Image (cartoon, rainbow, N blue to C red; front, side, top):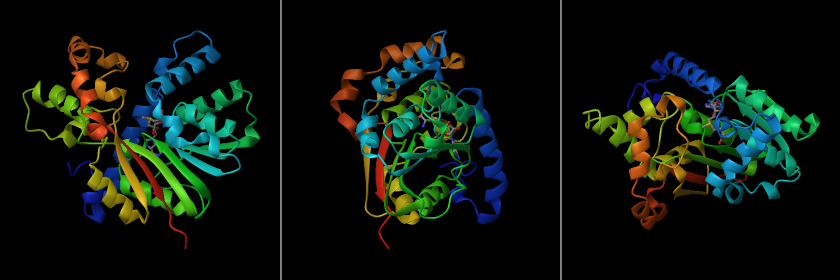
Length: 294
Ligand SMILES: C[S@@+](CC[C@H](N)C(=O)[O-])C[C@H]1O[C@@H](n2cnc3c(N)ncnc32)[C@H](O)[C@@H]1O
């Protein structure tokens, strides 16, 4: 890992200023475009929200089975990194006592307007801007902590896991997705941004930190994820690599990335081979981790 971007490997004294400036860059990145909204193209807000939702669960059919929204009635749920609020709306619809946080104001506003458009009463949920590394909640507050594609963007991912553990009630469960480094996705980024740029000595971690979504994005091996969960105190836990549309390069490119080379890469992705090798080299790690009873 690149030590500029992996604060948990820095000396304690070095961590604070670097993680703060990186966190500001992460926030700036996600303020510019809330995750998932590019899939909403209709003129009317409600049509756009429908489109965003349909696309999300078409591209990520694994989410409902993993999150188990429908079992959340009456449970205290915290979602970290709500983004456009599509999953958050599911928790609210399912009757959870739902709390959502995100680093950006844009995501909180987007999520609020989704819930308003759906006519979901504001007293059914609580949303606020907050940093996953310092959750503004008391110990032992939630039955479920859920987070999809978020914690690897935070400069100190270990701290976010410790915070998730702290705010979970004993016996509660964390369900998160973070990126997997031994994956097709990481390989494609490396081919594109290291090999094609004549710098094959760059590591997967360096390439992902510089080119995948917000600055400093990380991806973990199963072993690294397991060590982080153990350090945070979770037991038992399961970590499953999972193949997703990103591994097939099936996604809509950001405007700034919509180039001939990237489109060619999308056309040439060896989809049959990727499918044949199964989930082992999938780009996502699906993690369920329990906070032990006292
Ligand atoms: C890739 S998007 C995922 C959003 C949503 N979970 C989804 O699946 O569409 C990452 C989100 O994480 C948020 N985020 C990044 N770092 C965070 C942090 N330290 N605390 C809270 N939210 C964070 C970003 O603002 C952004 O909305």
